[in-house]
Length: 180
Image 1 (tube, rainbow, N blue to C red):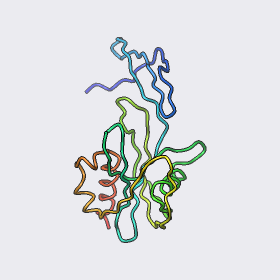
Image 2 (cartoon, rainbow, N blue to C red):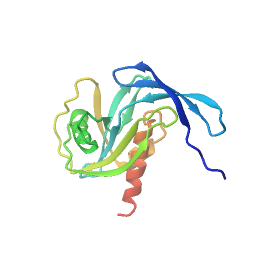
Image 3 (cartoon, rainbow, N blue to C red):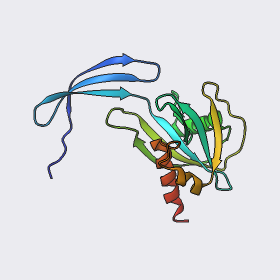
Image 4 (cartoon, rainbow, N blue to C red):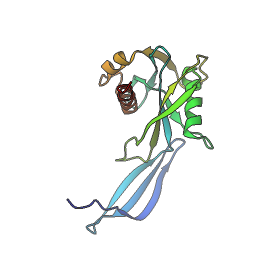
């Protein structure tokens, strides 16, 4: 098997600048000498969190996602503000979206959300020792829903739980419990 070679960027141009994303068009040279173009959605790093209550139930958020044209049941997630660490962003996002304050955080994983077209990287955490409170989110309509791990796992692959971070987060959390 031959090694996979890096592409050499010959030129790069931002073709769209928005509030949340930028789109860059790169002209790259392949190992075989040919050139081609890559369109890359540039998005800052984000966090996702599997929040588990003392009784084992998991805290989910249900919100309408315009790109999917439906409400999805997801683990809480969000952006990392300037100057924040991923851990600080996780704690802030949990209060904003669910009202819960996080006691303990453990990193489950990290991954590129869709490396075929975006550079977005997600830090994925497990949050425990949760303290209830009032959600502070003002820009999104969010409903909090609590599910057992078994109920949540049974919904993986359903239309309501069709986002990758949620499915991956649940599976990683379930795997981490196998040793206990």
